[in-house]
Image 1 (tube, rainbow, N blue to C red):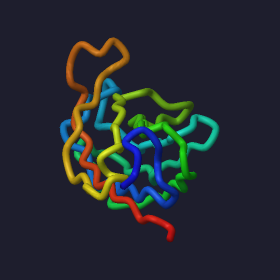
Image 2 (cartoon, helix red, strand yellow):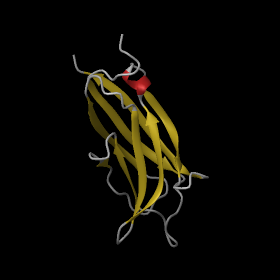
Image 3 (cartoon, one colour):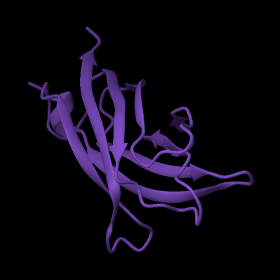
Length: 134
């Protein structure tokens, strides 16, 4: 059995399926959302940008190599609204994937919090699974 405190070696597979009810960051029109995701802030991955929707369907899968013994079990997600100049944060969430590396995949919706964290800024549908390297 694996220790509950350390990751086994393998690959964490993360599918950013869709988002719903994203909070409008623009005064006129809908968001042009994309999602950034990372384990370590030095290595961020991101979805494509979808124009003019607060209910984007991304269906994009990303992989994160996990080294044996690493104890970081948090995956971070941040949704942005792409603007002509720069981007505005729509919301963010973090997902604990300790159970995923123990062989229990996750397929669920997660609430996006704003920078103040007071109210929901929408939801993010994520699928996480682990592929051990033997």
